[in-house]
Structures are given as C-alpha cells and as structure tokens.
Amino acid sequence: MRTDYSNWEPLAVQEVSSIFSGMSIDWGIAGGWALDIHLGRKTRNHSDIDIVVFRADQQVIYQRLKNDWTLYKAKDGKLSLWSADEYLDAVNSVWVSRDSQSPWAFEIMFMDNEQDNWVYRREKTVQEARVELFSTDENNVPYLNPAVQLLYKGGVEQIREKDSQDFLSVLPTLSIKEKTWLKESLKRQFSMGHSWIPHLE
Image 1 (cartoon, one colour):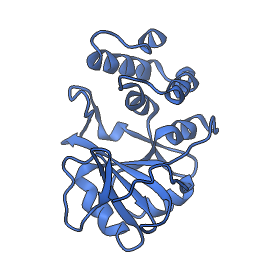
Image 2: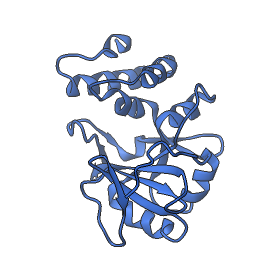
Image 3: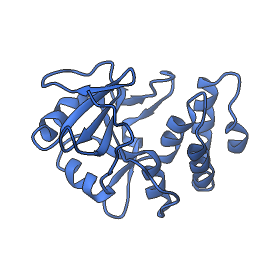
Image 4: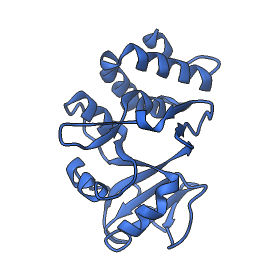
C-alpha cells in the first residue's frame, strides 16, 4: 500500500497518447487537461493527468500496462496493488507509476455504460451516447468533451476553486446544446439548485 498521494511527476499529454493509442478501446484525456485541450491553450498548471476508460475494458488496459507499469487501485482512501485477473467492480480509479518507489505518472478513471450509452455514476438517469463522449485535437489525441468533464467537476458537494476557474474559462466556448445538457444534468443531480446553473441559463 502507498500513501504518497502528492508524489506526482505526470506524463505529458503526448506521452499518455503514445501509451493508449495502441489499445482498441475508447479512451480520452480527462480533467483539467481535457478542458485545456478543448480551449487550445494551457490555462493553469496541472499537478496530475487523468485518462478515462470504460470499466468493461479494464483487463485490456491491465494486460497492456502490467509489464512496464505498477498499478494501484484506489478505494476508501487507500492505494493497493491491482492484482492480475482482479475485476474492479467497486473501484473507480487506478493510479499508475513505473514501480513502487516512482512518482505517480497518470491516473485511470473508470466510466460505466449501458449498451451504447455512457452512464453518469452519481445520477444514473444522466446518460450520453458513447459516440458523443470524446473529441480529438489536431494531433488526434482524444479528450473528454467539455460539458461531460464539467459535470464531473461540478457534480460534488464542495466545488474546488480550480474547478470553478475551469468552468468560467470554458463556459464561453460551450454551444447552446452543451449548456442545456450540462444545466439539465446538474438539475437532475441537485434538485435544490446548483451555483453553476444561473450561468448556463
């Protein structure tokens, strides 16, 4: 088990892409990096880098990474080794380093789906077609679409300052369709209201 949660030396976007591009699965850059790729510029420093994949593809990822990387499952605030042939049903993220002493290089986050739809774990009535989840940049790097990424950032009880900053940076670039989708998704999750909703009206 590891407890050095802040020991990060994240890979660059292109380094991550070189690892995942050979896998025959849906994947994309997520988090603040996804929003910066969407904007076409770096708006702030990023202490880590996240990749989203579908839970059903986890063994493809494990088999591809196991020889070169050490994989830790994150559950209940603890990081423990992901064992071979272990299906992670109740684990939502995996932290990856070169070995047990190396800094963290990237984090893999699992998404759920029902047939051809992505399902938002925090409010399962919020869904989106898998084919609508990702865009690609000029280097053909896939990234999570901004409205979906902002839902992950805003769909918590206490929004972090950097996530509010990301929202305000990306908001002017969202289409009417994306704003409406994000607004309605937040309303479903937060029936008592959400601080971002007035900005999306």
